[in-house]
Image (tube, rainbow, N blue to C red; front, side):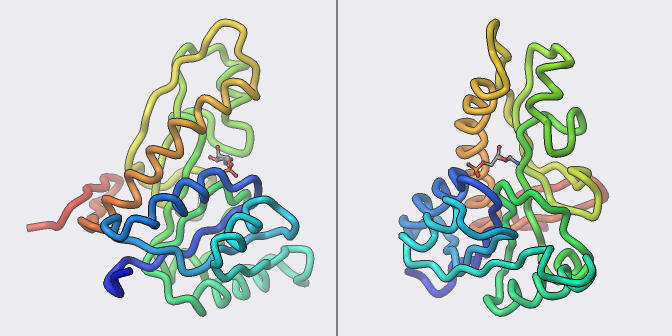
Length: 205
Ligand code: GRF
């Protein structure tokens, strides 16, 4: 594996199928990135088990183990920093990151709706309840807000008659995994620039 590969720390809170898609992608050394650690805000999740099976170092930093949110923010940033990432990827990480992490590393996030519609923890449910016929997923840079960072890439998914939250989310996740893998790979290989809210992949100039 190339030592030039972009170093990724991936953060998860759940089943880790997006992480798995990245684990599969980085197996190809032409992908341009490697996963140097996987972190979580809770123990005992499949996302961490996937990392362990792949032989990747893991760490867990639970909010409840810290007296304040600020302490957790600082400790999480320190745990991430130990692995010297070039890019942090939130792959179903269900916490808002604080300034210590956001000011230290570029952070990418993925969301199962077409932002700026339906931000937050229930994007799929909210889109379904609203009655939209097209939803999708968004890969964006993380900022201090809830799914408010500059958008990098989006893909659409139709809502089908009879969909419930589970069926729709599963279909979105299929598209989301591909979008995440494609976007992270391009960022690793081509770099990116941010001007205001506009993110451009590729070298500038
Ligand atoms: C993804 O849809 C992500 O956008 C959302 O939670 C899901 C995580 O799935 N926040 P997984 O843990 O990668 O399987």
